[in-house]
Image (tube, rainbow, N blue to C red; front, top):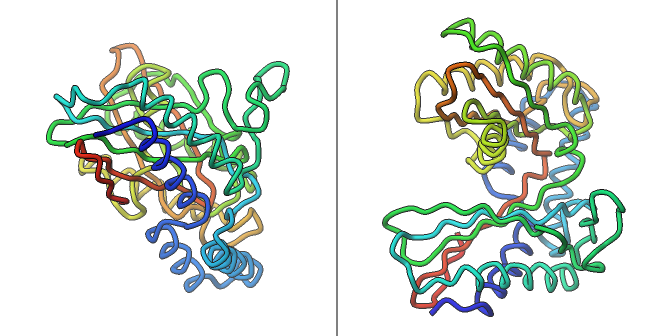
Length: 296
């Protein structure tokens, strides 16, 4: 049975994993970047990142002093009527409070206007932690992904309503906007980054798509061949900017670039960009309806 206490326990565990252990696909991408780098300053930066990853895992301490804001993605199986949404939300909220104290996490969550901590130093507040829900068939129970997001990478997000154009002209405008955003961001998002691009839908949908794109593993392309090609072309162009690790120059400005799309209004072309820093933290678990847990 899936209970509030079980969800709380899983939340603490996946937050600890996300904060202290970098996913293998990101680690491997950092190693590849280090091995192919020729710029000595960039090589030193990448070496420091890899050493930081090793220490974080060994000491079970956060990879970065900015432990992010608590974002979660929850996938529910269709027909799982025994899963109580109130238990999910209260369990995650209580898990964030406990994780903040015992990991520990920096208390980053504040009121947007007053900058006061509504929940004390527990990283909770109005609509925070944020939970994005999705329903999928064929899932027994639910899956929870913890996605703590740092402020430096979040603060250089970009959005535009571009003029709708056809085919190659639309691609040209999208690529121009993405590259301008990368150049404006420079070293602020702590590169090498992973870049999420959302195209289509409405304004809010585009940004949600951009953020969800960051959850895709490094080197996994969009299933649509045309979008996959644009991802590869944009990634090459981003890395040709020479911004490099921590903005100090070098071959690798981004470890990868992912695009997610949605159909949109005939008069619209919304495009959103969300950056993830080199410490691309995420961790997930599957909770079966029986109450058993599998960490993914």
